[in-house]
Length: 485
Length: 100
Image 1 (cartoon, rainbow over the protein chains, first blue to last red):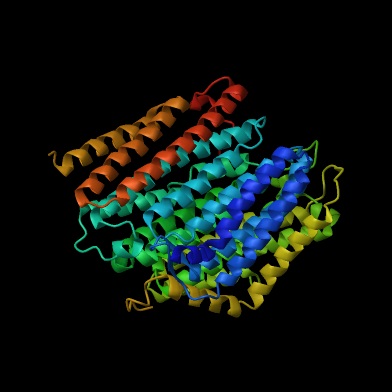
Image 2 (image 1 turned 120 degrees about the vertical axis):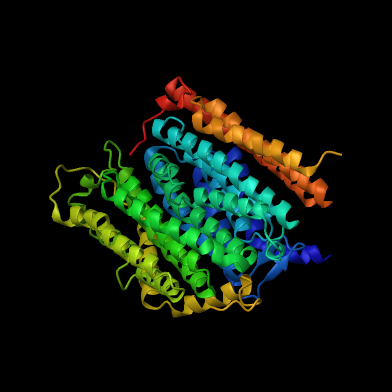
C-alpha cells in the first residue's frame, strides 16, 4: 500500500502520539512520576531525531495531499519538538518544588505536541483545523493544571473562552474559503479565479483566527493573563512550541494558498505588525511581574515575526523560520530561570525587584539569564540579533522600509525592560536573604546548553540558514510559480 | 430546493448571535454556549457548501468540527467547575485576579 509507506513521513507525530498514550498508561499504573518524565523525554528525543532526519529529504505531499513533509514542515516540527524537549527537561524541578509533579502533565504535553507536529505539516484546511484544535484543547488543560491555584484556573478559563471564540472565527474562515474555492487543499485554493466577497471574508476570518492564536494585537488580550497564571514550565511551552507551530502553519497558508494575492494582504500584515510591536513593547515597559513582562515581550516578538510574514518572499519566510528557532531558545531559557527562582518555597518571586543581587548569589544562573535577556534585545553575537537582522533585511528588500523603521525603534524601547532585569540582578543589593535549594545538575546543564546554542547560532548561522532556505523553497509554492524573490 | 444563500444567511445570523453573546454575556457557561453556537453555525455553512459543490470534504470537516466541539465541551466544563469551586461563582466580572 502506498499509504503505509507514507506513514514514515509522519513518523514524529506517530511517535509522540503513541508516547502520549504510553505515558498516560505508565502514570495510571505507577505512582512514580519520574517514570513518566523519563519516558516523555525519551519519546521526544526519538521523535526529534526522526524529525531532524526529515529536514534533509526532498519535500512533497502525502496522504492524498493531506500533509506536507520535508522542507519547512520538518524544520518546524524539529523546532517544536526541540522546544518541547527542553521545556519537559526543565519541568521536573519546578513541578517537584511546587508539589505538583504528576505524570499526566507529560502526557498532556505530548498530546499537545502531536497537534503541533500535525499542524506544521498541514496541507489542507481540515488538517490545519485539527492540528490547531488538538494543540489548543490540550493547552487549556495544561494552563489550569494546578486546580487549587486561583490564578492558574482563571488563566485557563480566559484562555479557554477566548480560544473557543477564536476557533469559531478560524472555522468560519475555513468554511468560507472552502465554499469560495471549492477545495480544502491549500494549493488548490491558490488556483481560485476571480475571488469574490466569500473568498475575502474567508481570508479575513482565517487571519483573525491566526492572529488570536499567535497573539497579535488587537487579539492579544488573553496572552498576559494566561502566561502569568499558568505554571511557568507550561508558560514556556505555550510561548515557544505552540507559537512556533502556529507561525509555521501561517507560513504554509500564506506560501501555498495565498501567494498569488500577496499584494492584497501585505498591508494588512504590516499594519498588524506595527501595532503589535508598538503596543507589546510599550506595555511591557510598565510591567513589574517578570512573567507578565515576558508575555508582553513575546507579543512584541510576534510583531517582528509579522514584519517578515508581511514581506512574503522566500527569503523572508526563511528569516522567520530562523527567528522562531532563536525565539524558542531564548524564551525557554528565560522562563527556565524564572521557574527556578519562582518555585522557591515561602516567597513570591515573580516581581523584577526580587531579582536584586541574585547575579552574585548565583553566578552561573545570572550569566545565563543575562545571555537570554541580551539575545531577546537582539544584541550581537547572540541568535536573537541574527534573527532580527534577517527578518528586517528581507522586509527592506520588499520595500517595507517604514515598517522596519518602526520595528527598529520598538526594539530600542525593548532594551529598557530587558536590561532592567539584568540591572536588578547585578546592581542592586539583595534586600533580604532567602534560602534557595540549589538547582539540580540536569536543570543547569539544560540551561547552559540553550545558552551555548544561542551563542553558536548567533556566531555561525550560515549552515542553519542554508538548510532553512532549501526547506522553504521546497515547501512554499513561490519558486514553482516563478514568483520573484 | 432552497437556494444556497438562505443557508449561508441563516448560518451568518447564528454566528453573529454567537459573537454578540460571547461579547456581552457575563456568565461563563452562557459565554461557552455562545461559542458552541458559533461552531455549530459554521457547520451549516459547511454542509450547505458541500451539497452545493457536490464535494464530500465539507461534510467530513463537519464531523471533525463536531468532535472538536465535544472535546472542548469536556475540557471547558471541567475548567468552569474548577473555577466555581475556587470562586463560588461563574460570573466573569468577579473573576479578576489577573489584570494589567
